[in-house]
Amino acid sequence: MRRLILKPREERRLLRGHLWAYRNEFATAPDLPDGALTDVYAPGGRFVGRGFYQAEGGIAVRLLTRRQTEIDEAFIENRLTQALALRERLFPGETTYRWVFGESDGLPGLIVDRYGATAHAMSSCAFYREQSEAVVRGLMRHAGVEGVRCEWPGGVETAGDAPNDVEVVMEGLTYQVDLAGGQKTGLFLDQRVNARMMRTLAPGARVFDGHCYAGMWTMEAARAGATETVGVDSSQRAIAAATANAARNGLDARTRFVCGDVMETLQATEAPYDVVLLDPPAWAKTRGAQGQARTLHQALHRAAFGALKPGGFMVTSTCSHHLDPADFVESIKRAARDVQRDALILEIAGAAPDHPVLLAMPETRYLTCVALRAS
Image (cartoon, rainbow, N blue to C red; front, side, top):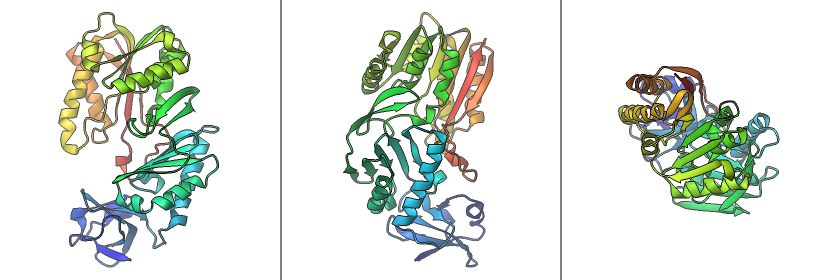
């Protein structure tokens, strides 16, 4: 097994449970094949962990285990089985969920979503490309999984019956999921629990759903009894999918989808809404983009307050883990002050529980969803 030695005191964070060893934390610059397994040691010879090397980026090694155990097919299958058991406890009877959430499930850098009989795996790490057969076999061994789609560096691999699109049921709603061309792995599974807020806020309301993608929030609002729902997204492909999903669930009479810029649409609103929903893409993909992200969110929130009735509700989200919840709330507060509106925060939530947060790694908490009532 290859060995890499850390600089003095750089092992402390890793020994406390963090799984990323950064390139500048090693005594000498690592020179290993991309994806190669390696052991990490403290300068005095103390074993820190076993993981895989990454040739590019700031993270040099992602730790898989703190023991000198064999990293083989059985190891990967065991981690997949443990992750599945948690999801089956969290969502009994469901077959749509995030099966593996990277570091939190002991398979750092790997995402697997389950859509009924199809598992969709994604990773930018060469290690999983090299272990593709083990990942596929580990997924296919579980009852009900008939096909696997893997997106690795360099291309896509499929096994079994792995279609490009599938029809699934989640939270009682039916979706057609585009596995080949959709965003992320096909659906925004992290918002499934937060979207249940519509069952309380949407009855009798006129609802605006910004960045609606496949129409999850829009359909939840319509099903809950909203009188009118308007979903807006800049992607025509997303609008077509959302429109088809609403029709598939018999909700097309109370839903309308528009392709356009969300902020411009809000600013042009003539009749204010009872509920405004916002879920923009990650605007802070790096730590250096935090300031720009706060500015963009503040502008979007200002437009949302302007389109919201007095006493109306806003549910707004950020999926940028570099923008912490306090900064995100600050962008809402400044926007409210800009338009002279008071607001009450009703709830601050994160991602659904199939996206668990590893206590030692705050980086695994990336989604912040804030529900508030405006004056």
